[in-house]
Length: 256
Ligand code: PEP
Image (cartoon, rainbow, N blue to C red; front, side, top):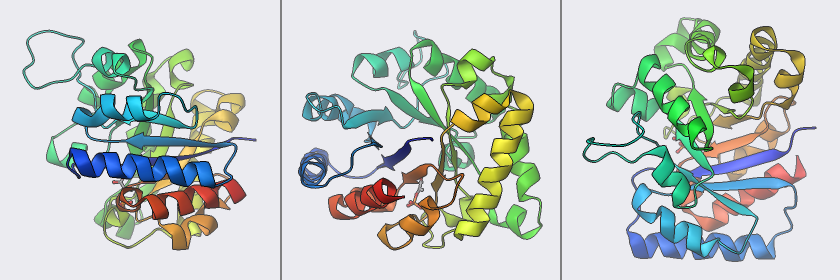
């Protein structure tokens, strides 16, 4: 059975004091809650990653993720942060392919493949996001869209690299909108993704690959989403900015 994972994507939110408050709130809430077996990940903005690594240094319960890594290994790329730097600051994971990066920063498959390679070279575990937009959902082409996103990236990796990936299915129409995919809608895509992973690699890989749902996941809907057989947890945006909501979602994963 796959372990559940709940990852919080803080995006471009909070100043340093607020970030510390949230980390301390999460730390306290986790200590008071009984959630063994749930992998907990937080992805603060890059400038707070070292602080996060310090706060959670002596816990094995919370791992740190970056929200992006450079497509380049090192050198003259002003403003960029390499995967190696992130790993050296205590990150174990990195979110790649988020729809906000794809749409606001024109990240296409070519760029994402370079970023995936850099992440894997530095032993960061990518949480790789895919998902259709509203028009693609309405046109009924959403499965095709998600399959293509996987074929252009993840399925090009050798098996020994692809098996480090966590997929996050994040329908763009559900991100930050308050509109959540129904458990049935999410399960349909997750089940299809698992079948495509099996076709691209093999059934062992398909069985083991963690697949998270993201898109307005909150305490009130987490349990029914996580109860679906192919949903292995969540990538949480807005609700990860409040320790009490984040912990409720983690508890829902613990019970699923
Ligand atoms: C996200 O952006 O990864 C996300 C899932 O956001 P939200 O939970 O706010 O919809």
